Length: 448
Image (cartoon, rainbow, N blue to C red; front, side, top):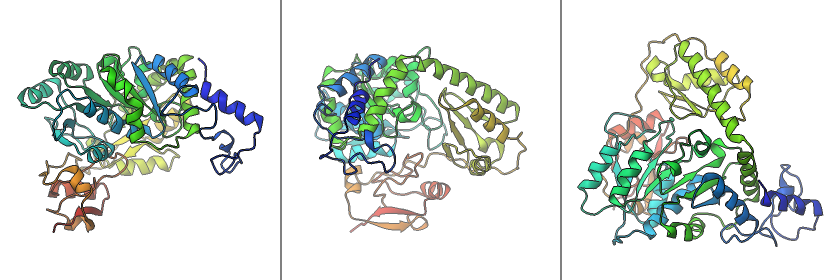
């Protein structure tokens, strides 16, 4: 597969042209990558109005993902989340004065930012069983009951899958329910770009989503910030027509050409057998999971490239386990009181798997019951998300925040899932989670 963006930049670099244009480093090596860092010079195309090399490269990605249209982003899934919510709102069949979207509660904070900027109301969907802050399993039957009970349908249903702990929603089942009611299904697939290249594909587009976003950099060989916004072949054609305009609302007018080149080169890798490497990596993870299970580790291994140790079930704090691994030269993706998350890709060497196995000694329970990181109570929404985010605010110590109104989403990153939603009154359950995630101070609305 051709790589038009990378080829153009490489040829420009070879010419040694005098750079009387942005960026200010002029191609001189400070980090070492500056020679390949350019701006929208003649022939370099324009990300938000592509007619040349960027369009050609996006055409390649569209072919690889089997979408109606795949758009590049250099602002990761955060940019695409805002764009797809905007597109669904803009083309809603039933326009209302105050648009409402239905969303699973474990949404990334970027979703809240989009709702604030677009002045949307959110009807949150909570899981039917006790779970963690990061997970929010919603069953098709549950969604059917909710949509069937509403007099005015939301303009979309938004869900995160895979979630941060590797849980995967029944996208096919949820899609069937959404189609029954004529409600577009939007999926934050930030952690699952590689799912398209499994056998069979588990990518949301192939399971019925109308739109989804992928953070290519999380699981594919792409620089941080590289992502995709996908529009399904079965979705409204207008989603494709206005896709670039939507992305431009939430992105910089100076996209990184380093990131664009990495997305471009990733196309070639995917077209030339990278899927086989993903499958091989999946087998290595399955083998590691088997070995760790024999050592006594409680595991959650649903998402193929993610392995989660459920430390809380073993009487071990995830933070302590992460520190033990760090001393062996291993840095994990995430750890909280109850979990430790490994993220693997084909770029991990065989020795990485061996080191992880060797660093995790057979489990000897410490007899300490780790706290359960359950979802906070459903806070009373006394202001809209937009009102709270734009209100006059002040900082308050966590222990003094009970009953105050949350201003900005209170969240640790990772996992970037708000414990309190902007506009909610803060409950004691929320405060307990703030402390659990090391949040000692929060922004609250100044009530006149």
